[in-house]
Image 1 (tube, rainbow, N blue to C red):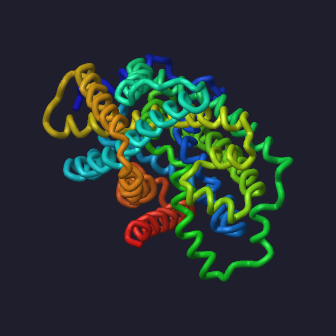
Image 2 (image 1 turned 60 degrees about the horizontal axis):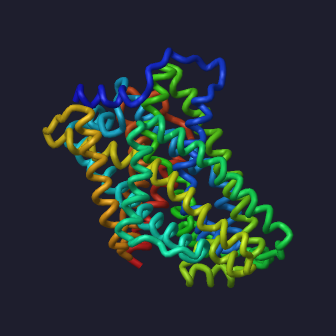
Length: 426
């Protein structure tokens, strides 16, 4: 365990203890890194999934977006901060709940995040292959070669360390923000009311609640960045010591404000342009909102920009989820009784990720969407319920008891989990 703790500490450059007196460049880097993990390819489907329910459910979801995401991720951050110095989420679970619970949560944590990494591997290969063929009119290399080149490129960033990952993601966020803003503003002259056609009549309370029940998981996972929270909390504790909770909350709040404002502007711009019927058509065609808009307007600019935006979105989300998946895999290896040296552990993890992601991206299976859905309830339980349970049971988190936000987080977590289970069984 000491070797693993040392490896966690070695992930970050040695720095002097920081104070809260000034917002640093590193704080901005983390803010954008959190944004980059959360806002990915799922954002390009959110206008369709959230807009199909009509105006009033979308308005309620827009109001709930910030508290749903902020309080949940703050709770998970506080949970990691409550452990000993340098301990990641898998070690903190073992510290608070025992070896068996730690092993179980580590296993679930890995199998909830790793399939999403596989999905991004497939999506990235499809996006680049399509871009080469249809936009650049080039013959793409064989899929087995293309997928290997792309994954090796991303893992080259990974090999530079987690600080390099976060910095790379924060840099990729800038063009993504500009692209989202460009698209949202581009659509403004084309606003025709769209979803407002459903605003004239209030839905029945039961119908509204049912729509919200099924739509909340969509909103939750569109802003989910739990895979990077553990690394974020470890770094904040190293940098700020006993001030880590306060600074991490500030970074989280700014990141979530940026997420909510940017994404909701994009969502509302889309749903004010397209009618509910057109949104349903896009869903039936299994297209992202960018692809549907490109076809809708026959606009070569959007047709060319869409795959580039998707490439950036998928790449930065891949990097953010890699941190969580590798953390889970390393935890599983250590808890199995094997204790390789930190560098050996990093290499084993990278090799495993490369081989599996490459194989899956080459095979291009269609089952991955179902795997992601199956992982949803586990992610929701870890993000929403586990930190709230720890607040009730763990002495180190007792100071957070009695807050109204705790009840809200539990309620949203239960809604998300039950809706996901219902969607699987329906």
